[in-house]
Image (cartoon, rainbow, N blue to C red; front, side, top):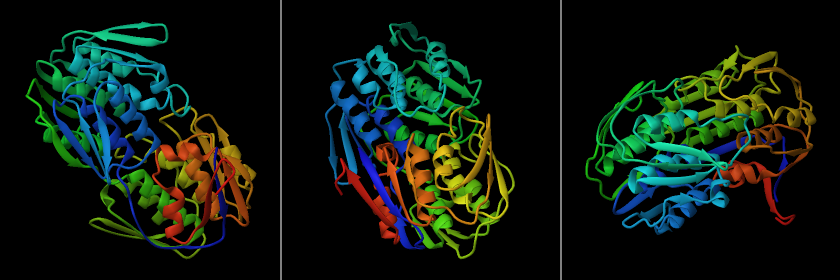
Amino acid sequence: MTTYLVEGGYPLEGSVAIHGAKNSVLPMLAACLLAPGECVIRNCPRLSDVEASLAILRHLGCPARREGDAVVVDASAPAAWDVPDALMREMRSSVIFLGAILGRMGQARLCAPGGCELGPRPIDLHLAAIRALGGEIAEEGGGLSCRGTLRGADIVLSLPSVGATENAMLAAVCARGETTITNAAREPEIVDLQNFLTALGAKVRGAGTPVIAVEGGAPLHGGEHTVMADRIVACTYLAAAAAAGGEVELTGADWRTLVPVTAVLTEAGCRVDSAPGRIALACRQPLRGVRPIRTAPYPGFPTDAQAPLMAALCKSRGCTVFVENMFDSRYRHVDELRRMGADVRTEGRVAVVYGVPRLHGARVRAADLRGGAALAVAALGAEGETRLEDAGHIGRGYQSLDGDLRALGARIRRLEGGKS
């Protein structure tokens, strides 16, 4: 079991580089399966979800290896079309392989995915998109069996789901004719995926807008791409500096993708300076409560940043209302924040944070990826030592949370199996 020991009360100072985006690289790894050649993905973070994706690719017959910060995948001769239960349970987003396997192999068999428990995360939109392209899907025994020759279609998503948009893009690349995806997700990671697919020879346009067009059937080949910086990691470190106080600089991140979060931090009393490839935050005074924060699809406030920002605002003056519009069970960190002295009250999708003068160290447990990161943020601004247990979840999205924070002056140690 992974445990973090955090001694709070020390301001953060210094600079840290932001690693590649988890939510970009996972669909890119699935996209590697489409190209009969060698793909090189640079700035690929070392995350447990990445390792799970590489294990899936190897099972499918695609050799994959690391070379420094890059991952090299050779999908010249995939030999399987199933993803067994043991591999699917490693991460929820493993369903992203459905469109790619079906498109390349003509059939696919997947078990139910795993990952963080954030309430119902139905894959109905994924399945509807695949069916619109001509895929025949049978749901049996807790898994999916798919087959069929894909053809271009007009896909209209009832919600701008990131995963369903990505799955539709991957499948459409292999379909005959043109596909239009309407009400597509607009996240920067979707643009990053389009850029990777284009590097492989695919004809995709419109990412970043509500309508994406894919001209399927173009001959694909190997290619190279550098993953964008992870904006949620950047948000977490900004929240950490706001909670602990101090002045930090983040390099590599695109400030334009962080405006919904930096606007909240500015309103709370932080000074934020942005430039191409750089974001700096200074916090030298207690935070103040802000106007209601409502999570929404991009370009709205990101649901993945909700928990870290809530943790930072626990010591604010005044109160802040959070409305979680994306997931049903995304307040699992609240009970743990209360153990540290926070005053947070929830009802349904609403959480109200009443700022307190101080937090204290406590023994807490991470229930999911972003909630675990939020507890680390709170611990940095608390008095005394916090023992953050079940912190293995954090490794799904942060390459080295403890190492990056130590580089900024935080007093944090990582224990594995009771040993540092």
